[in-house]
Structures are given as C-alpha cells and as structure tokens.
Length: 546
Image (cartoon, rainbow, N blue to C red):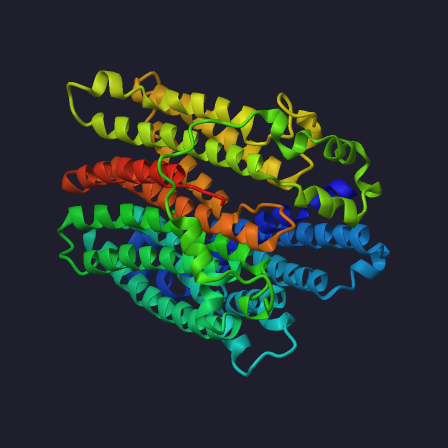
C-alpha cells in the first residue's frame, strides 16, 4: 500500500490527462457531427455517410475509454485514501472527488450506447456531451474551493468546453478533409471548423484569464509558485496553437484549386493535435497543484529565480566522489534500509536536510555532461544538411546511447550500480520511475532513429518516430515532479526544467513539419529543430542548483 501511495501522484496526473483527452475527443466529436458533418452532408455527397460513420466510431470508443478511465481514477483515489488516511473503502468511496469520477462514468456510457445505436440523434447526443463537461467540473478547483467568487464555475465550464471543441475536434477535422470529395468540399469543412475554433478559442481565453485572476491573484504569485509557472507554460503552448490555427485560418480562405494550401493545412493541424494534447496533460498536472494564491509560505522571490537561471560558466566538468554524497552517509543508509512504514517524519526530514554541497555538484555535473551530449546531437543534425558531412553526421542518434548509459549510472545516485538501493526496489520512488521512463524513451529513440537515418528502416511512418518520442518526452517533462520536502527548492528545479520541455516540443513540432511538408516550409523546419536541440543542450550546460 505504501508503494502505491508513493506513486499515486504521478499516476493521478497520467490518469487525469488521459481522462481530459478522452473527454475532449468524445465531446469534440459530437460537436463535429452536429455542427459540421450533418449540415454539410448535401455538399459532401457520397462522402457524407462514411465521414459521419467514422466520426461516430471515434466518439463511441472515446466515450467508452472515458468511462473506464474515470472508474479507474475513482478506484485509485479511493485506494490511496484508504492507505493514507486509514479509512474503510466504503468511506473512501464517499469522498467528493471519488463521487465526481463515478458521476462522469454514467453520461460517458450513455453517450457510447447512444452513438452506437446508429443514426445520430442530436438532442440526446448534445445532452450527454454537456453532461460530461458538467460532471468533469467536479474534479476542478472551481468546485472544490469554499470561497469561489461568482462566475468562476462559468469560467471553468467555458474553458473545458472550448478545449473540447477545438482540440477534441481537430482529429475529426483531419479525417473529414482526407475523405472530402474535392477542394470545394474541403474548403467548406475548413471554413465551418474555423468558425467553430474561433468561438472555442474565445472561450478558452476568457475562461483562462478569469481563472488566472482568481487562482494566481498577484504578479509575484505568477512567477513565484509552481502553479503560476505551469500557467505560463500553458500560455506559451496556447500561443503556439494560435499561431498554427492562424496559418490554417488563412489556408481555408484560399482558392479550392490551391491544393498546396490544403496540404499545409492538414500538416499544421497534425502538429496542433500534438501540442493540444500536451496542453491537456499540462492542465492535468496543473490540477494537482494548489492555486498560487493559496500558497502563503514558501513563495520564491524574483531575485532567487534570476540567480538560479544565471548561467554558470565554465560548466562543471568534474564530479565529486560518490563516497562524499549524502546517500553514502551511514545514518542515511540505515534509514533507507528500514521499512518505509517504520520511518517516521522526523527521520524523513533529517534525510532530506542532509543534501550537501557534493550532492549539488553531482547533480550539476550530470546536467552539464548531458548538455554536451544534447548540444552535440543538435549540431551534428544541423551539419547533416550539408552533403559532404552527411555520411558522418547522420550517425548522431548513436550519441543517445551514450547519454542513456551516463544517466543510468548517475541520474539516481542512491540506486544500483553506484548506490545500495536495488534497481527493482527503486521503482517505488515516483521520481526514479519517471527517470527510468525517460531513459527507455532515449534508448528507443536512439536505436530506431539511427536505423532510420542510415536507411535500415524504410517504412514511410518510420521517420515520424522521432517527433513522436520527442513530443512524449517533452510532455512527460512538463508533468515530471521532484519528490523533495523543500517546496522552494523543488520549485526552483521545476523552473529550469519547464523551458527544456517547451524547447523539446518545439523540436518535435518542427521535425514533424520537416517530414510532412514539402518545399520551403520543410527546409525551414529542418533548420529549426536542430537549433532547438542545440538550445536545449545549452540550457543544460547553464543549469545550476546553487
């Protein structure tokens, strides 16, 4: 049970993100059917029925997945409450958050069976979709707070609805464009979805601003607390989505004969899906944080943030000996060997307080060496564009294996082979488990991308593995947390990691466009993503913890 409690924080973020994604896909599909596919059916001709049928199947599976996910989330939360608060399972099921999940399962199942019934009936579909949004409100800060000002629930409702209409509707939009009979039909679909997206964006922006005023409250809360920083990251991602949406807005107003414009529209919309789902998971991570306005203590000053973000030069390229680290101290080793249920709060606090200067130097060295690897990969990927250097530079993905080996040894100093904590046992720690997931992504990417670059894998989809894995890594980094008892120090570490996640998402998006676009757009994107990789490496080289 203790192990489950320790991993619950990260598990809950993954579950909440998945729930928000399934909800958006189900509600967005209903809106697409009722507001776009059905009104445009006469202009779509024979393609109308296949488009509606395909959309209906996606809605069905999304709603069914949503019902399963909210049930799993309710069970996980109840189990955590039983273990943490020593409640009976029956009492845990009466918690408001558990009941909110259970409440959302009913309209999800109702929507699934209604859409499965055949012909779309507008009123029941709209009612069940609206019920899903309202049910999800129960898991938001707007409902859980006791001192909510009037209109906060309305702002949260507008925000949730806007995300579902826009982000949830993009996959249906792409599907319909691919099946549209001609350029005129594609333009009609694009114009309709553009109008719907404009309304959705307005709802997202209005709801987001209203919630930020309540939840953040003051400028110092925006930059001095984790909640404010995550809102800032979401705002940057939202701005990126708006830029892509603006390009598509212009594309749908081109002549139906301009096939190039509609091809670019589809590629930009594909990137919108990736960035949009990252925003959804960032929002899930945000929901697990206390609003910044409620953080009366442990707020970080602007001067402390500037000091932490000021580059350290030259980089730390010499590591302290492992025997000098706090995890090697006898009292810490003894405490770690004890059963977790027998370790009291005082002991845990003493362990956390023993992080010394050597620990900081160890971490900075790890980040700086990793920065050298990443910067080298970015520079080699850039040089790959030069024909003379390409035969050598194209092997840059193999540096990923060296990076993974380095991090495996050093990222978690208490873990085997350098530390005394067993490899399997260490996975109980959510932070270590997340590190291992990142390592698996790095190794998988390195080997596969090298095979793609050397043309050992020639499948058409193979090059897309790189932007997909990089995007997943960026999204996980946004949701990544460090289990430190010192809230201020944890926040300062997150401040340095959030820009890395954003740069990773930029590299992912640019590489996707390089593969999927043609001509000048592909060439520009092909320059952007290696530069983004190099920038990430420089950020790691500038990393500091003191």
